[in-house]
Length: 318
Image (tube, rainbow, N blue to C red; front, top):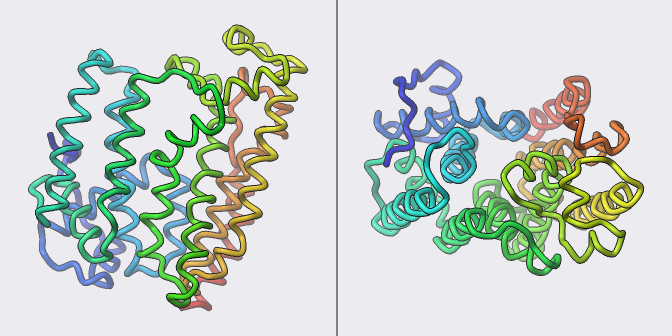
């Protein structure tokens, strides 16, 4: 199964500059990385914006990680698919095993897999991170709710925490002595990003038959699954969301010092990503928690207020 889009990918001058800076000269590899960038720009608006704050030589490899994650997610969450969950599980397993085998072999014929394998090879990213990610995607086809935060963390580790861990070798750290602390921060920030999405997407997740907010924590506020299904904001739901929002902010605060341990040219990217992704919970508050009738979105104005200073800092860091 190929990850490639239906149309040939055009390598424009900006993409070509990034590929040259990254030392990617092989035409097939260039096309693979260009397709990953296309997927990122099309589907990961905030993620893509933050990536542009990185030096050109680092961007293609971050795009490659996104391409891998995006395709697996599409297999699982394509609401227009005619496949049953069982058929999706087979498709995910077949594709996932193929990608893992390609990583171990150090080569791939898949149009996106080529970029991923090259990224893993260059930065020595552990295979276990990709195995964990695929495990969490499989959970989405079999698990509809999580009784406790501890239960949820099995899913979140693979779906989000490992993304931060995969990126760390690409972003770089100020010294080897800082790597352990930076690793903890990367995992916490990835977790915060995912939890913020869960808060925003309660309604969309219900459409998919899933509840990602821990059931026991909801119950402590008097919220039941049936109440969520009614999609009416109640004082109990508002209270439960407030608790979840505070957890996101706590994780963000705890991860902040770790960003300072990244290479100077990577810090503006991650500060911007932290502000924009975790800022989703600010937007939930701005719509007065009306998550069932409105979608909390980061405004263009806020993106610019975050991105422009970060871009100036990124230029100084280079």
